[in-house]
Image 1 (cartoon, rainbow, N blue to C red):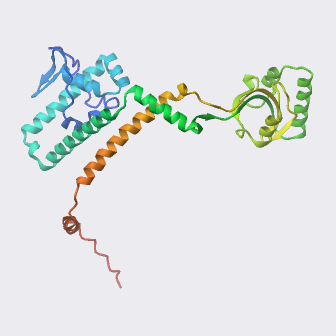
Image 2 (tube, helix red, strand yellow; image 1 turned 180 degrees about the vertical axis):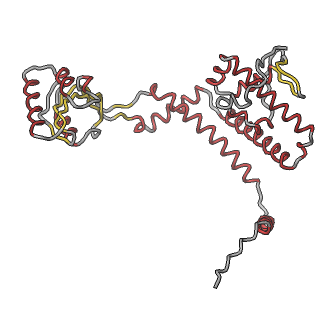
Amino acid sequence: MLNLLSSPHRSFGALRPLTAHFALVTALVAAPAFSQSKSEVLMQGAGAKIETSDVQAELQRMPVTVRERVLAEPDLLRQLISNLHLRRAFAHDADRQGLSKNAEVQYKLQTARENALAEALIEQIATTATPNTAAADKLAATIYKAEPQRFAVPAQTRARHILIQGTTPESRAKAEKLLIELKAGANFEELAKANSSDPGSAAKGGDLGFFPKGRMVKPFDEAVDALKTPGDLSGVVESTFGYHIIRLEERQPASTKPFEEVREQLRAEVIGKAQQDARMKEVERLRAQAKGDETAFEAFIAEQKKQLPAPAATATPAK
């Protein structure tokens, strides 16, 4: 047998940040079995035994990123095996001491079993209801054609600007001077890098990228809208940020995202809706068969109220 536990005194909770799902209550539900040619014993003693199939089952329940880390770090895998063994040993001792007959423990076991079975059925319903790729894509195409407004891309403009911060006469004079230089043929990008107060665009030669109408402050937006041809310059535009000089770079007309761009999104919607509809259909079927007993309900409330502690007596103030 492999000696995977190099230090028997490792903390039981050392792996907790990675494997929160190792909570004791989950131990009450058997992990799914994963077939393999031979299951070898990795750790045993104290009435408990951990085999490779047990560890494989736990690994399969982990998120892929966590599983990869555990497999890449032998000490984490050793700790996982130790935790599984301790959990099983605790359960063995508890059973040997008769705790499995305790009413509260039996209730927890029953609840855990019911939860596991309910989750398994819900997953099975969702899997059965999942359309194949071809069917999902066909429905996705139908949605795409029926709801074009969802995939509309508004007209957008790309522009550069130079911002001179402040609204003082000196700030405006500086902006006016830069505008004269630009009209005389100065390089816009270089002037923006050297003079613009906009930290987001100055290093990029004043480039603001693409933006839809209404994204910028109103004076800026109106000035951009008035520019007609790429390369056109605005005058000095005042806004709450200061003084701008704007150059139109490019306009993109309104468009619709191509189906290929949204295919995956719509396919996921189709599958999600099919699964949810199937789950809700089963919920409605089960609820339709449920019949409540109002008399028993009222009697239960009355009995429970009798068991509530009596309200504390109000102290009478001394005269």
